[in-house]
Length: 169
Ligand SMILES: [Zn+2]
Image (cartoon, rainbow, N blue to C red; front, side, top):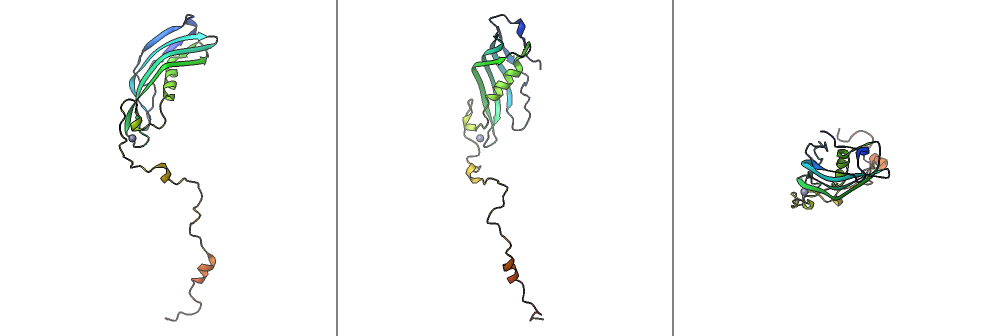
């Protein structure tokens, strides 16, 4: 896809307005547990320079399908950054708005979403508690459990048959 590039030296002092929709998948997340982008991303921002900084403010909106961290079902999630505000030091003369939108929207996604937390269509988690709660898991420490059977040399010697020929033969 074509990035949305802004030439900073071309901006008038009051800045310039950019708005539109981005439909290609700018997130490029393809893993099975990754958020799936549901186009479009809508943006409406004003870009201006301020004393060596680049300020972008306005509104961003995008929708995703996320995977529930509990039951693995897909749930809809809407990211709405309103107001959206970003102030970064100017580097070079070109600002890639696409890259900036991508990063800020990804940061706004929840790390461990759950079905009932969807901000679009919340619904009960589908496993109904089929997963054990966290407390049921024993943390892995890498150490042997202390009650593991240990070889006791003296008990092992006691279990040896008595010396000499067996009385049965
Ligand atoms: Zn769920």
